Length: 137
Image 1 (cartoon, rainbow, N blue to C red):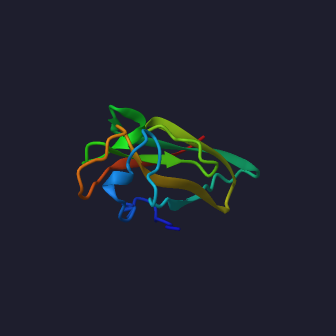
Image 2: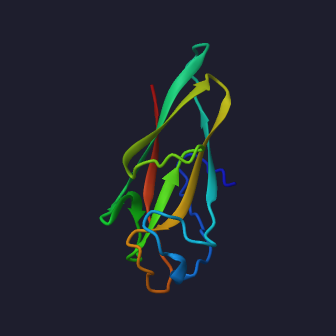
C-alpha cells in the first residue's frame, strides 16, 4: 500500500502482464496485479463532528472503454475503483468520504490494468496520467 504526501506525484507500477492475457473488454488480465493506494486526508475546520470530503478523478478516458483511463498503449486502459471495487469514472467520478474533523483519515483506491478492446495489445510498456483532487465541503 502506497501513501502519498499532499501535492506529491504518485507513480503506480502495475508490474508485468502477458499481452495475450488482455482478452476481455473491461476485465483485469490474468496475472495482473491490483495496486492499492492509501491517500491520507486530514481536515482542520475547528468544528466538532464529521466533515464531508470528495475526492474527484480526472483523466483522459479510453474511447473504446470510457470507464478506463487512456494509456500510451492502444488496447490497454487503467481502472480506478473505491474500496468496494466500484469503478470511479475518469471523467470526474468522485469518492465521497465523511471524516472526523482534526483527525487523520485514509481514502483507499485500487488501480489495475484492463483490456479496452478485447484484442491483445502489442507488447511493451504503458503509461497513464490522472489527477485526484480533494474537495472539502
